[in-house]
Image (cartoon, rainbow, N blue to C red; front, side):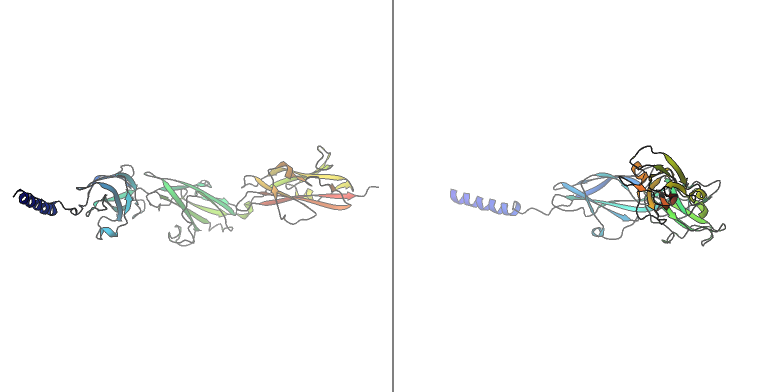
Length: 387
């Protein structure tokens, strides 16, 4: 009797165990997500401080996923959003505010932020938390700083034109610039080029300076330059003021600058220091360069270059070259900043005066424009036979 009772109790416990305490658990419950903070910054209303949290009724939140949508209303499915894995619960986001209407007015852009928690079993919040808002920003402003307009918004320059600019932004920072150019009288008349015309506008970049070569202009039709700034919210400047971010450039090729140099001859080889000086010739006196200097044939001479000056619109003389009895441009250059390159012939070579006319040319190049400007001086040695 006792054994039967024990058997019956065992069967009851077994049935109860299968019914209520089986090895299979119930379905995993998804987590829930809450946005705890969504505040646009007062000084930059395209930067938003966001914070969020999540709870899981039968486990723990492992991480979060965030996504963005352009606009206040989203009608698609959550799976179509571009979700990004994050393990933080707060962040500050910089969003676009690049929709600009009337010139000079603030720009805006609406956005919706989504966040959903993911639990330790991979279940996602089926109804992500979201926050919609309209970001706004003030357009940036640029100004041309080089060349400085002379009393108005027009300047006269040589064919090599360097344009430099800078910019400010009241509620952020300028991140890119571009400039457009057109003839002042071309269409649109007295207006900047069409903003979509890539042939007249440079590419957007962080550069603040560009140097270009331009053809001479008619006095009645100069070049017109416009500069635009773009800020970190994507807003683009569209107001142009004469003398600030718009100037006109008259190009006069007579202003092109040339470097200058003087070449001198001394007795002895270049390895001998302090030989007697003979004469000098300079680019500043072209008439004197035609006058030969009489020297006894067979004498040794050294030629040196000094008084190297860059042209009016350059900053330094960069290269030098010597040619003997060859008026053509040099095929190679030497560094003009090194003293050992300012004498000819170089090293242990000897220049011996020959009977008749001996020409020694010195070429210099400065850093004007893209490729440098060159100039040449020469000295004529007339070798006289010793009697």
